[in-house]
Length: 251
Image (cartoon, rainbow, N blue to C red; front, side, top):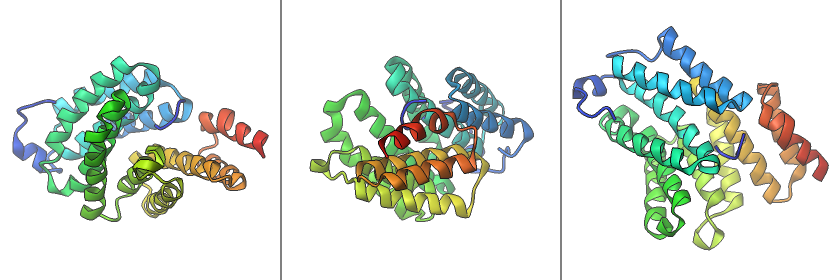
């Protein structure tokens, strides 16, 4: 598993604005979200891709904001992985995700979540075209600020603030210490209400926090954080087989 980590235009507005129109709590969709979690834990990206395709089909059949948000989270993770492995695939899914996100923005109940994803997607655009950072960087920061302003208890918003601060050069406002603090806040909020669809995001945030500690030369905290992730998920392959052994060698 690499670092960090990812429409159907013309849907009736009622269906999008009413999260209860079709529930994302159906056994079928929950099974798909569980499969995304297992894909992340095991590093099985082909399974992740197939699951995203199944989520697309489910959303066409059962359009709702809740289902759309689950699809967007799954696509978000797939894009993040593809940035390192296959930029063509990353562009394909990012184009789709940005169209889908326009629909999610119509539902005020999902405003904070939509802004957090918008901030992430703009960051992905910068990764694909670094020269766009001057133009897109401030937009990404504003989107993340808007996400926290809309709901300061949204862990995904704090996770994105951590990602932004971690990957932005210090000359442009990045801060490893600030990233650590944002990741800590995200983890606290995830743990207060551990929704099943957030489990892989929680693990990914723990990895972000551990990497932040590493950059601050706090290796004992890095090791403790990786071990915490394995306490939550002993089969977390990325940490178990790569990141924790590397941290122990540095200790």
